[in-house]
Image (cartoon, rainbow, N blue to C red; front, side, top):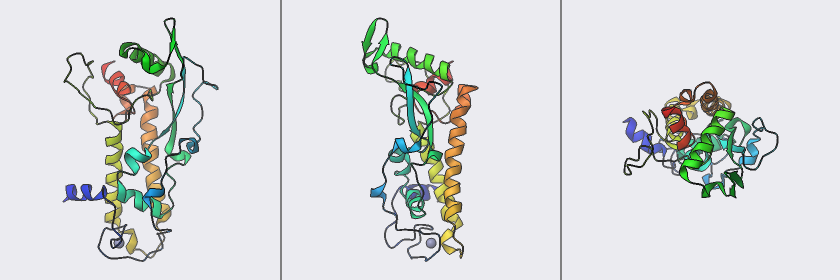
Length: 242
Ligand SMILES: [Zn+2]
């Protein structure tokens, strides 16, 4: 039953379904502020207003800040479509500072070993070494590469050891949280209440952002404390092999 419900959360409610409980009937309520339209949602990293990390200005060859969405808009929020519909219906802002954190990322052009070039042009070993030194320097996860990385690729015997990994790629872990909260919302049937539940819904989504933020910040004390949230494959490998 739960598995069916999980799959349902990834599909958009149709116009004859209640977005809050999934039943094939319309439930008038005070919670809904507008008709949700997922095509209007954009990813706006600058709106997250992330502060700088230690450095006040980007230094070429070192690192700069990435404005990271704790709940990525396209890879996570818009994938769990029913949750996104509920969030939009109460005017939840997925680009607010609550959903943002500054993480170190590469600042091109990059100088290393007498060469100045795009970071991507260095060898994997050099890139990994730079990433690890930046994580050590900042105590934060390196924000380079895809959040939907592949783990435990044993196809190549040259693949570096990833350690005993106990988590899924970042996008999948965040999606799981969104699916869970969507199922909670369905169970709560806010559409059946006489009260306006919009603030409660917004604060519950904010709680997810803050929970992920706390995990990412826990990296400074011990990289394994961020589990299960690693924004890049190298951040995960660093945590589980060092
Ligand atoms: Zn309903």
